[in-house]
Length: 303
Image 1 (spheres, rainbow, N blue to C red):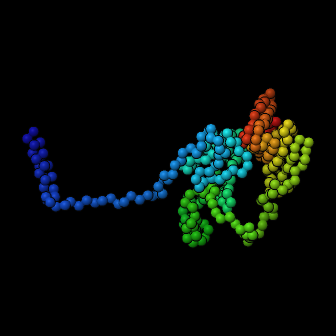
Image 2: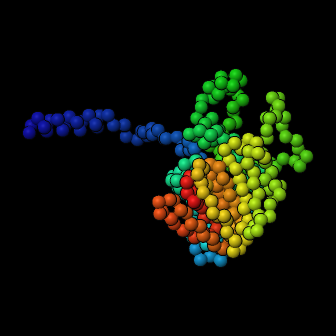
Image 3: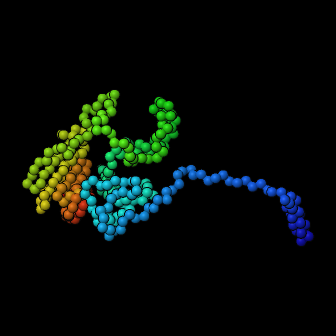
């Protein structure tokens, strides 16, 4: 006990001896002002833009982002899915939804993916690399600039203004009406990679019309064919079989079905309802009812 008291006294004496003299102000080091390493998160509200029972025509627009939809809409679905139709700005990344359809959303779709997009006047969709990754900007943002400079044998300053993250669709200035396209020093490819399908004349049939583009007219489309089929009310599309290729259908119009028969087919309806029966052999059959923006895929050997 005596040793413990001596120790306590010594500690008290040392603390008093090291204390600053009375009346002498002590120096206090202040921390630097806080500064963000990235822009602060926005304070803009991200609430639901409309209620399911709202009497409006929803638009896929939130603040400065998005654009109006050109074409048919399934308004009841859009009213129910406000945060899918006009998502909060905090939504990001690959959480799959029913506007971006891949094998994750439609497991039978192993040969084609689909995306519903709209570009405003002057907007640019980034050039794509078709591989495991998606966007050129995403790739270059993760390559050191000195590597880019060495790869392209140019000065590193040439990459001072590349985006720091992926860009998918971004605004730009619309080109002038008389602006000529750039001329490649290597000349033009032997066959064009664009095709004015809207100018193809439709063939009138008993129950509607059909327009077709395939490798005989669109030379570079070696694995993809397109048929725009107009089915009049009460008419049907002919019974048919898929012996080697799949068919993917996107519903836009009850009176119009757009079909892409490749690899895959897309059909579209914009109002009303339609129905389709799939026969999958060995006594397997199922009938579906469709409304606007519905989608289906028929695999090879399905009817």
